[in-house]
Image 1: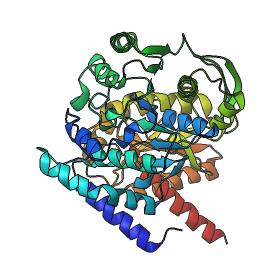
Image 2: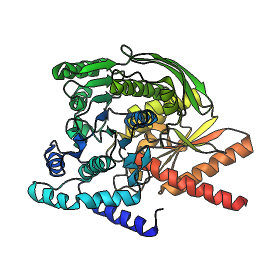
Image 3: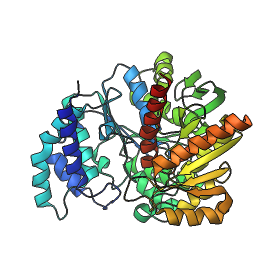
Length: 455
């Protein structure tokens, strides 16, 4: 049981971590994380690993792989980033976030080594590097049978890239983090291809032709085995279902029919196909039982990814933070929901393609509420408002300073529209992972108050 003291200690550790370089800052070197890993005894090499990169779909694919491997009776460790609500979400063991006590204990185990590396390097370890090292140690001490690591940013210079993955997965690549990864999709693809290890299996989701060419060249260079969506494995069929979708996937060794996934969107069907191929590749010559795949996908969740959190009115949150992610979100809303209108609450980060995000939402946003999350990186509201006016016109745009007030106002307006006009107006909250995480907490408090008032 987590006590108030445990939460206080967790807060102290998180505060110490946040004083380091932010995870949004990438320096093209693995020197610090390599030195730290060596000092810790290279714990990341004590268990086999699966490594996932791409532009969108990384986290969900990682969670799918974790869920299926866990169903194979393997002890799993999963590292993902960023978190939605609690920092402990980043390190999961057997599909559950590490406990606050475990998180603090792991940090304390490596704290002296952090000081040592900080003193010996030109720059101190970053927040992300320390988090990665903590996951290495936590998984080794448990111990896990397999570690599943989502890249934080890029691939070649990402701190997770000191693992020696047996299987790599590359989800669809688009334009994002251009200030660090390159200005063209080819440059970004080259950076992300850096996770491909010699003689490994590489699961490649469907890519743009220019991206596929670069990834295949890296596979040849590393003598790695490419497993391509549409060739070695495929999403054969997809149908909408209550609470998600049913898919049929041609895997590497067999066809898996009528698999239920409790997630929305055609892209999630493709993510599932890649995840299945990764699990099969990891299993090697061992046949993967149909029921393992079926059970693993049926229980998977992906918080903050087209997640329905409220009814009457329907409120959906999505962590889309770039035009590529927004395009997938818009397709999902258009094809799988039947709303009469949508009020969209948008709080993007200032270092993202804000215009691209707003333009992408134009197809489904009847009214737009621009606001800000609590991050210092959140885009200035007046800048977002000016862009929104130029795209939607002033009549469709409202500006509200805080995310809480914006959500409350949007929900009240949607409910009023539905009650008075007998409509099916929904609220969509999006723009960043931070926005999605904060929205989850806000909506939970709203639901709690509503329940109390009804009692």
